Image 1 (tube, helix red, strand yellow):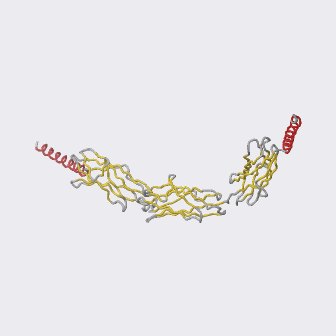
Image 2 (cartoon, helix red, strand yellow):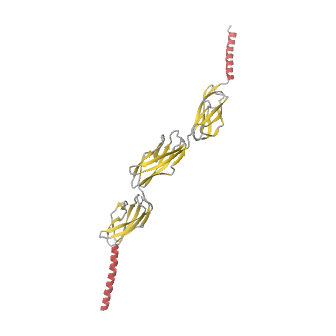
Image 3 (cartoon, one colour):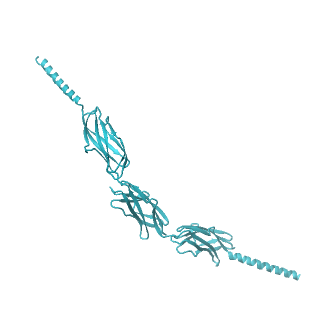
Length: 386
């Protein structure tokens, strides 16, 4: 009996000693932290949104203080839950609570892997650490970038150039930039954002805005390549971009006559042959030149030739014009507008045409007058004596 009692006491003691360490281990664990994002790769300037669970393995309510340790300099973080900034959470026994840590990587940061820890500490001195790491995939900078996918454009002197530029703020704070341009004499530059002209604009951190740069060349500018430096600048940072405008030449056209005379006369119902000259007064060739006329009703105007394929700079082409007036036109001055046009330029000239009636009608009028006077004379002779 004594032996059985002794065996029972020994067995009970062993059970007590085995169970107590297990309970102490569980109590030592106490609070557990969990997030699925223990290792993340990001670029400079990004914000990481960590979702955490804090689990209470104890038998009592735990007040848990939350923080991050060993966070690199200039890295910022915020702990929130339910939309509130958070320092402590109360967790019931055997339950868990959620919270979020937003960790912002600075823009100016070296490439590499950064280690830190999430900490959950209880009032009774318990502490749980969860190692985390962030891999920065590229070196970050504190700078402004002004870029364009098409910094060079080509056109004639009458063109207006629209460059699309992107202004990116790679600094750690919102920036307001003044926009400036250095142009050749007589040139103008207009900056536009969302269709509105601006002289400055504000860009949020790690954000960008599209800027349209409208460049208008000086009047009569010569064919050449021109540089237009533009700049976005403030007290802390700036960026330059050089635009290029290639002027292929100027376009000019003049429609006139060999003598410069823009008046003539014509007999009603008859035609008149004239000669006009189309001159290329620009520095670039003119192509597909066509001629048209705006004449009074009933008039007919034809050209020979009606179209000209090409006129080189400082060259001219002669065109024959056949003009036929309305046969019922009364005597007087009429205006006939002739126009030469190409895709690049156009010119018009107004001709004053004096219309005369045919000579035969003049003689008919004279004969009618003579007949009238003759009739009156006859009547006077015949009936005057009575």
